[in-house]
Image 1 (cartoon, helix red, strand yellow):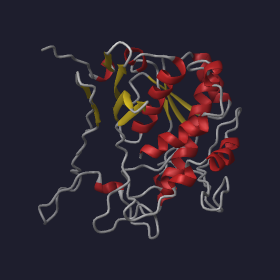
Image 2 (cartoon, rainbow, N blue to C red):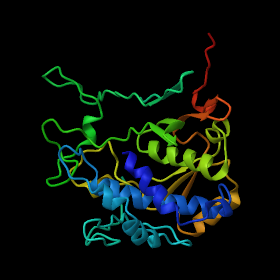
Image 3 (cartoon, rainbow, N blue to C red):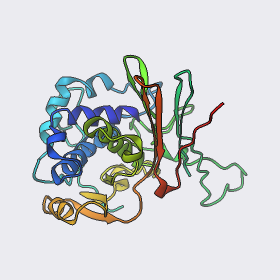
Length: 301
């Protein structure tokens, strides 16, 4: 799942996000459109690398990124799922674009005085619908992240790991950890992580500000917990854009004019925690979004 963030960030390298302004219509629009393109490739190509030859080098290459980036229309929201073709270096996969139909995780980041940093996103979420049948054997919902679509990179096979949403994140600088992020929220996890990374990298927000800043996300991607073999039927609403209602109404209206199906959310979008290790001062800064009942703590010997 981590390569999704790399793809989205690579696409965003071509835009001056700082000049757009944090949470401006341009900023939210461009980041959302980059998420859609990266999610489309995620859904088309990601699978257990022990079973599938995921073309990561091509997906993250300069050439492929340059082909995909112009698909982001600065004035209009895309309503189609549009995977590219990293094998033949085409911006769109032949016959791959389509219009989407309607269709108990916890977090942990920790650092010690020796500079070790851990990001983890424990998640079992045992699926109870229908019980365990006659076998008495239940299963976690991560098994549901596999599908039964023949030829799909994430199709179920013996011993195969599913392409899941869990994406605890470490960011290194000069070989040392500087950021740790963990997010709960299914398919919101990567999207919220991208929000936080950009808050810090582009706008200089410390963890306490980043985890409480308004967030946004889209459902224009496959539902990672729906194993329906007809994958197109697992996509959410075309053009959907959930955004915090703390974002100015004028911004939300401007996004709606570009074709986004804007839904203002009074409740938090995903559940993040974040840690920043300041190498210069030796100080650790940590925060969890208090609106999601996440917190930070320090222990002194």
